[in-house]
Length: 225
Image 1 (tube, rainbow, N blue to C red):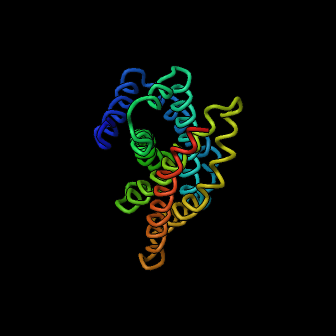
Image 2 (image 1 turned 135 degrees about the vertical axis):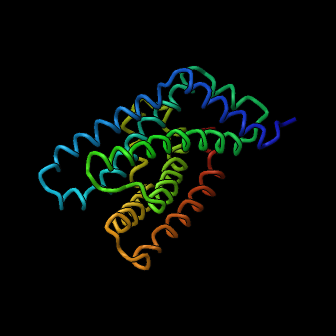
């Protein structure tokens, strides 16, 4: 008898978040990388106010993407190394529930790092990033990144070159998410009229839903290979 879908999802999310609270490994890795990246870009663009205003959204999203890659790689690799992922596959749990549980756990951690970047970027770049619409775009963008990243991390975690392979596989796939997120964030920060950029969050939402459906139904096949 299979464990009920949402009961399995909640149990998996709780397991991942509780393990992270105890170890703080993923948050430390992603947070330190994000902090160093933002500081380095800040020094590089310090002398040019106009360049900072133009580049801040790109800096934000590039940092989020690579921090998430680091976290996703380590998260799935740890599951494989400890044998806990194999145990989950043997358990009477729906494969879709495994995906949703892992995805939401990863989403929560990456979103935490992304939220921390907003006040940090505001302080270092002297540009206000704490805006309700920026938060909406951040949530939608990280949703798409975490969704595809969870599937691809599960696929590449069994390979020797998983650190490099995840980046190579993930970056082209999330390009639509990254493009829409950067366009929307840039326009919001620049104070452009809402009519000029309101289509981009809608594009993000549609892309997120498409990725969620595809990843949900292919996850079971991917982890069996």
